Image 1 (cartoon, rainbow, N blue to C red):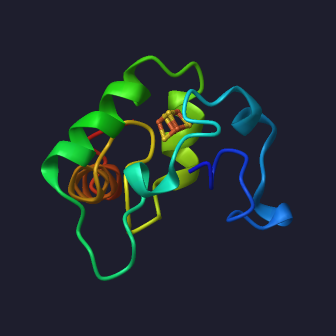
Image 2: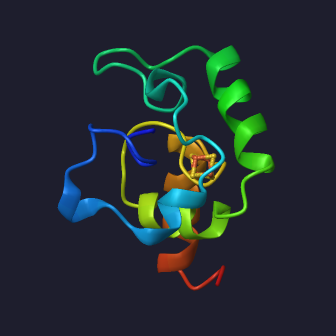
Length: 94
Ligand code: SF4
C-alpha cells in the first residue's frame, strides 16, 4: 500500500494521518494489492496478513479499506471484508 501507506499511488486527498504509522509503509504495494487482473496468490495474501498482524493502525486501515474490493486491508482479504460487510449490514457484527 504503500498505497495506502504513504506512496504515490494514493492520491493526496485520500491520505489519512494514520497511514504514517502503517507497518506496510514503504513496502511493495503489490504484496497487498495485486495488479488488476491478478487475484494474487495465497502466499502473498498470507505474507500481507503477517505484516498486518503487527500493525498499530490495523483497525483504522480496516475501516478505511472496508469498501475496497481489491487486496488486503486491515489484515482481511477481499473475501473476508465482503463477509464482514454483509454481517454488519445484517447487524451481526459491530
Ligand atoms: S493493517 Fe496491513 S494493510 Fe493496513 S496499514 Fe497496517 S500493514 Fe498496511
